[in-house]
Length: 340
Image 1 (cartoon, rainbow, N blue to C red):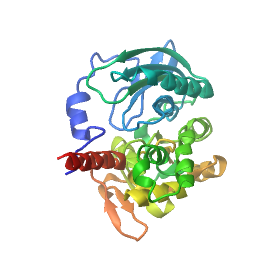
Image 2: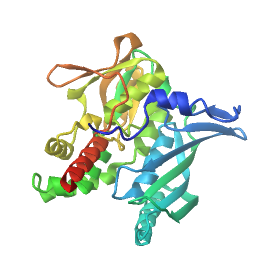
Image 3: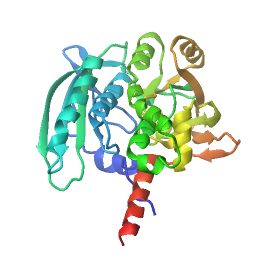
Image 4: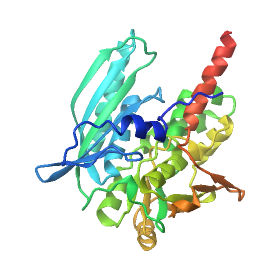
């Protein structure tokens, strides 16, 4: 049986974490909630958005990912990321990796005009590879904070770019030994360059500034389906998503076919999901490059449905286990079987 890795389930999050949020302050505009990407706070009449995410599922380019993943969480709320903090935990005898990690962080921050302002770095016992936890802050540039919970029945579900951008890059890098017998070096090299597509700042801030967006979300674990589920749950409605409408890059499809995984359930940083009223969505698709309408939000009574390319309907009733975690767990099981 595959172990449940990744984000903890909604019920546990709500019962154990979200009921223990310390002192309730009036300057916290958006507190921690299921499905939300970040928090929003009011400081001297200005709104600041803050997000925190670790990098745990990837063993490659973790410094680059840490900056971009956290910047995405801030941007989809309508804020421009500006200040980054970083904790780096290194296993024993891995100090030599620190310079490479910091080079990636530095380059990513320079690219996005973000300052690295504070952090912590240590050699940590009982871990097998470096772990990064990033914290990003930014200033609101949209007229209001855009949450994941603002989708309403009748809004269209829109995504940018293609599915599983981050997952494609991670699998091409971290599962190379499994893929080499099945795919060409050219395909793998092109797939590894997907790391360069991770940022959603351009499309997120353009949508936030110019269009009437009901909700936006950065789909990470659980992929496009997982992101749509989180938006629907946060918004107390449901979604219908059409697989045939979801853009999937050739490299992504080839890698997913080779490893037997679903690109719609594979970690999807690099795309964003948004809910917009129908006419506004049609206008945004024409005005923002790379946007595609892939579904619609509906009343909660309809339930969450993915219409597969063959016409079959798949109901989504709980948070989605990311295909990356499944593959990592299965790889560990095979390794244990080999050693036994």
